[in-house]
Amino acid sequence: MILQLEVKLFPDKLNNSDYIKSLIFQQIKSHRPKDFTYIIRKRSIDARGKRPFYLLKVDVYIDETVSNSLNAILEYKVVRDAENVVIIGAGPAGYFAALECLSLGLKPTVLDRGKDVQARRRDLRAIQQFGEVNPDSNYCFGEGGAGTYSDGKLYTRSHKRGDIEKVLQQLVQHGANPDILVDAHPHIGSNKLPGIIANIRKTIENHGGEIHFNTRIDDLIIENGKITDVRASDGTRWHGDAVILATGHSARDVYQMLHTKGILIEPKPFALGLRIEHPQSFIDKVQYKQEIREENLPAASYSVVAQVRGKGVFSFCMCPGGLIVPAATAPGEIVVNGMSLSRRDSPFANSGFVTSIDLDELEAHGYSGIFAALDFQKEVEKAMFAAGDGTQKAPAQRVSDFVAGKTSESLNPSSYIPGLISAPLHRILPEFVYQRLREGLIEINKKMPGFLSEKANIVGVESRTSAPIRIPRDKDSLMHPEVEALFPCGEGAGYAGGILSAAMDGQNVAMKVKKYFESKSI
Image (tube, rainbow, N blue to C red; front, side, top):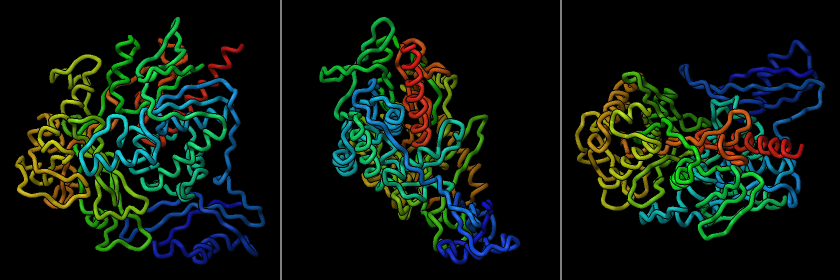
């Protein structure tokens, strides 16, 4: 007999298996079991009451052999002589598309403009400590993409997009903690992801796939309406029976290349704002209702939203116990993002605090055409840089001063390693963006008193929430409507918004590539 039960327990009992077993026994004792085994299928925290508790969903095996399908081992095929799929981009979309190619018997050839995950660290150190931005190797570009060094959160509401469990199993198979298979809000951590990504690379190469770094693609070769090759900046040509374009939300030169070649792209709405940073102790106190966070409770997170004159203002990519990092991809711009290490033990909590920017609104403010949203994004990033001292120091205000519309005389301590510089963000931001963020803070503070605080900083600019361009594709074939065998994929194409959704989109696109090959062989 297999029973599915829910067990509630306080955090101090979380790791006490005997206690958990006793709670289960109270629910199944009517079955008079001589013995039983249980497996935790899902683990979540309910902090709505006076004291937070864990809710465990468990499978209980009574006189049954335990079957733990969550730890399934996925098999891959050797593909050295198979049909070749060129994948541009080694982020979550590109790498999970490559793994799916191995499963389907296709050969992935992955090309990335950046460096492998280890060599990339030197360029991150350069931007953190010296303000030097390498346009091909930074927090956005390089092996693993933006997801490698932007927290490793594995939560998505897009459960209909693909096989979430498969993505999580692949991550565990390549070194992630198995806890991600059961946690309601799984998290890996930016200190753990590099090793996992390197293991994925080994799997791809060991099964006959290829991965080439320092390979920036600057041309697509199209013959009779079909893509046949891609050309790198050094003149090297790579042939592909199909091409998956998974270049991420910051590859602006790729959008320009597509437009120059007359390949259809479209502007799309996105969100822009700032990154807000509080003491983690404040977030813990608000969320857990405890002066000191109880043992076995993780650093608390939050999700906030307000409607201001019909537009959304909301938190984005919240990083409990995290760090703010410089995410610029070119000199002369300031962009910030957030990340957390696996322990989430920083004394700071940060989150994007952004507002939706739609195309009609941009047109009303003088931005039009295919690159309207992209041009707006770039101008704000450059304005943030101009407000600084020529380094990657980010302009910032105390949140209370931001709302009051005055420059801060001093700033709070911050996790942002390059440093903060006091600046009038209320004037640097476009007026309509500032007013929405300001009113949003006031509304959210009513729900979470203290959110609008002089003890919190707000830092500019959080502008890479999603791609400001969409590369269209047919909803059934996932192929570009005008270019045969070209498959736009992931965040850069406008079809994902995080590690999990990008990975699932990579899997889905690889499956469509397989169907495309099958249709051509009939």
